[in-house]
Image (cartoon, rainbow, N blue to C red; front, side):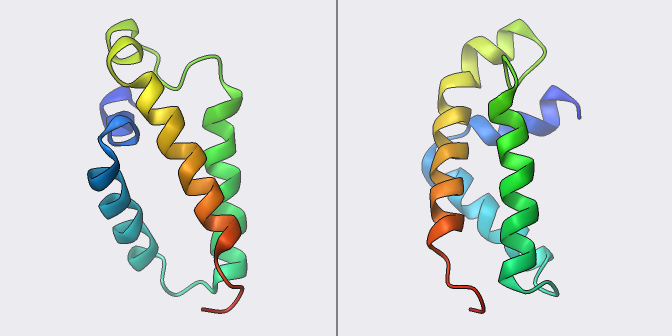
Length: 84
């Protein structure tokens, strides 16, 4: 992915939360147990990298917030009921 596309990961909490809600609506055809597993796997992939962003200026600007947002989303995914 291009860093510009990933910059949403480093936005303030309110913007990121709105984004995750839109993503969930986009994938509403999948039940929670499938969506949660796939989304969590994708988010964990970013955390496993040395840096979420390839470009240094984006790493400097967004990295800390991106990692916080990703961790919050993973925690949220773990709290969702299986079939809601």
